[in-house]
Amino acid sequence: MQNSYEQNQNMKKKDLKKPKLNYFQALVIAFAMLMVLEACSKKTTTDDSTEVSEDKVSEVVDAVVGEAAGSAGSVEGGAVSLQSVVDVAGGELLPQATCSYTTARSTCASSSATVNWAGCSIGTATLTGSILESYSGTGASLCLLSGSTSVLTRTIDSANPRILTLLTGATYTTDMSPGVAYDGTTFPTAASGTVISRIESGASNGQTCSPSAPCYTVVLGGLHRVLKSAKGTKFLEHIVTSNLTTVGSRSAGTRTVSGSMTVWHQLASYRAVNTFSTVVWGSSTCCYPTSGSITSALTGSLTGTTLTVFTTTCGKANFTGIDAVTSEITLRQCQ
Image 1: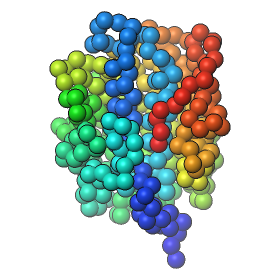
Image 2: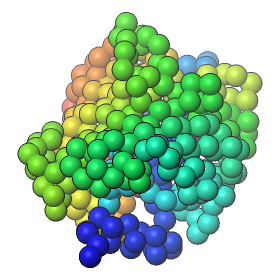
Image 3: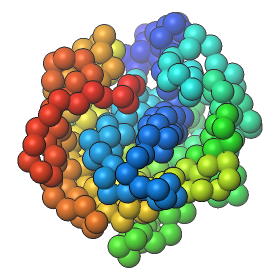
Image 4: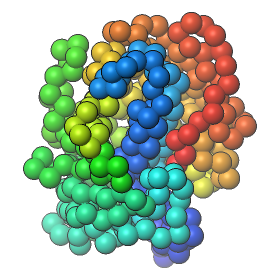
């Protein structure tokens, strides 16, 4: 008799009309789409080689929401999503894509597999890079997260980092060598990879975990992201860490994310510590959060605290900036 995890996986394989993003691609695409738009729309400075403090912090929070959604989507059902189908130019899900996770991923051997994005296409962009997946615990021999304390560690190849090359020639590179942040912070665990753990009892970041509703923690030790123009102009440089817990699924309207995600904005010289307070994707027909909030504490060239409160209106949230003014914002990071 199949367990609930196996049934869930079989259902996912049959539902090809509603493909989901692979975790790593989700992060790349979400941030690339957002930051390319931001880089093209900046009007507050004549020097486009750096981020500027006038950038909307609400858009940074929106990007963090997208990254959290990618983390959650990658583990719903206990395994990596099977397809990536994002059109970078239009930001739309496509019925087919040449960057197929199942094609790029090697067969499982000795509890590990390799993902090689050897120049495949995502809409008008191409993706390269290699990622090692290493499993331990229950299901490791099949490269699955199928039991309590199962762990998946993903490591980007330092010699072959993940690079998304856009039609314009701009490149968006992600590696695990962040170096030293503008404020002197170091990231000693960055090279150890992204660690995803399944928890079936107790609690994690305030979430209740059980065999029927397992929690998944996603710990980023320090991802390093750089977006450059075709001529080498650096539009952004970010370092991202996280300790998030996700439970439930978006398809069931029960996905819930709690925990924290920190982003160092290297060119703008500020840090945002984003705390998720029971952020829920409460509708199976809406790919945005519909309740909960994110509090962002800013230090460096920007200081203060912001609050993003999600509403039941799909794609809308109320954002209170460091000036204490509240306004409605439209979310763009849909996963």
